Image (cartoon, rainbow, N blue to C red; front, side, top):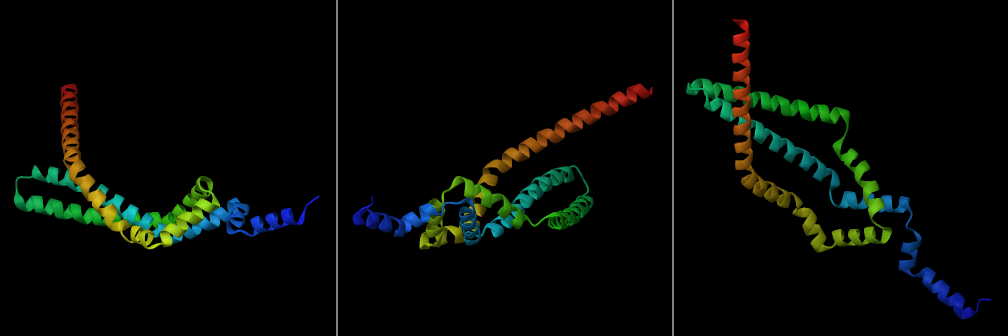
Length: 193
């Protein structure tokens, strides 16, 4: 038998915001909160920035390889022509890559479809609401606003430290490949005699 005091305690507990949040910890609710978080934090824009940054890094690596190859061209005009032709090809590649990627899928939509279930599975509704509250706060907004700058500085710092190492690895790989090709050519030449 429930006393009026027990009923009052239960009613107050159920009426409290914390109880309402705990009661709505369904996956659907977490997905909705995750979608709000994804939008608030600029998820689609971040994905596009990551793709652009990745493409720029790949381009930088290939550019270093072609500049190294151009260093072997003794005539300065031929070297410039070679590099100009390469830049044109790189630009064509980037455009084609971007068009092909966007024809197959929208990276922002794919990221959203991938990330929302991850957030919904890793966080409770209460935790997602806390994340939303944080990202709506002045510090959270600053964190979102400064994300591109933080990423650019981090990539710049990594490339400053990793760049020389990549250059060394590229040079060693090119030398090894040249030696391998020279050995194959010599072997082929011997077989032809």
